[in-house]
Length: 201
Image (tube, rainbow, N blue to C red; front, side, top):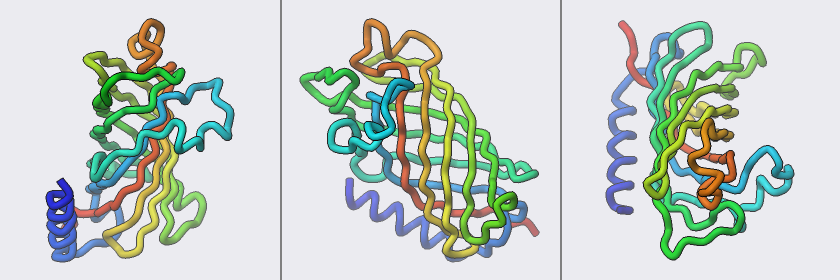
């Protein structure tokens, strides 16, 4: 697994360095890959300090586990889709399974770039809204998502992205009788490498 991750990173870096990049409207596509953590114990009743209870609540993914492809559509806005996989051992309400449970999430987001508004240069802060589908232990549910993120572009085409998502359940799956899976909300924390591509003539 580790060898595959190293190979994937090396391949993407090799491809990206052969291309020329400039602004978003000239390079409308962005690919981000990285690691993430999931906190199933987060909801609207969670205190601010508890969101950072890493050892108690965070399920940190092993290796590369989240991938996003997005496209710039104009007026500082982009649309994107993210796929994530994780192994969950820390559940809401201190519930425990005998074995870890596999977590899958597929999320779509409309992102608004704040860098022009805030007069940023290499920093690209952004806000996002979207919908997603989460699946755990053969149970799936729809979520509405709110995102806050920032990308530091250390070159014209490559940057480091940090993003926080609050994913609120839209139905009773994942809570109620299955509150051990999700109390009604989930926090997701992502750190990844972003690459812009698709240069226009």
